[in-house]
Image 1 (tube, helix red, strand yellow):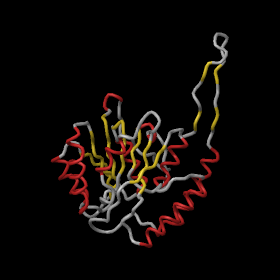
Image 2: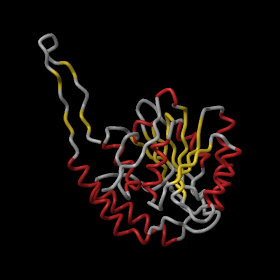
Image 3: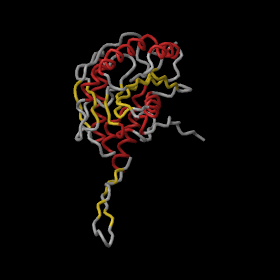
Image 4: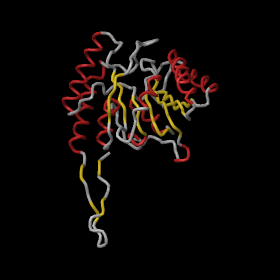
Length: 265
């Protein structure tokens, strides 16, 4: 029998302003530049923040590098998965540990710039619950760009969406967008759709994209095309079968007491 993921209990009193969450698998060379960039961006802002690195059972010394950095930076938290479980699982582990009212996600390979996060945070409002990054000018090779363009086109066609770059890891969310959402393997590619299904508003804005500083991509695109397509069909089914209705409670005193809209999550 499979065991449900553990959550770290976070009370309302423990909430802080921001959690920056990054999944990492064998990113030893990138980790120090990432943490130092987060330090340089957020320390001057004087807001309560934390950086959560979800270590997906790295074997290259990433864990040891993180522990050394955590001795310098008390805002750095390390959540290590017991075995390599994939990008969605690593992000879910980070979400379950996060104490921020706002969550921001980036990749650990420094292709996303954490310096973009304050700009995206400023776009959150009563009308905007999530800001999705769009790598409009990607620093990838030609084949990778074509693969991604085709994948986004197929994804939008089958899911009925118009998201330009659903797989971009640079995203900013109000906590309630993702808090408590049950995720499944491969679902990190569909976060904007899942958030919309919960009744929240998503916008998309262009963000910078940089070449990898070190190493190669660990979560590869080509080897997961079939799996991603199957995941897409699952999301399409979920979207079509989601419960959407409004109900009112009737009482003798108040014949039409409004009740909250039901949105399946």
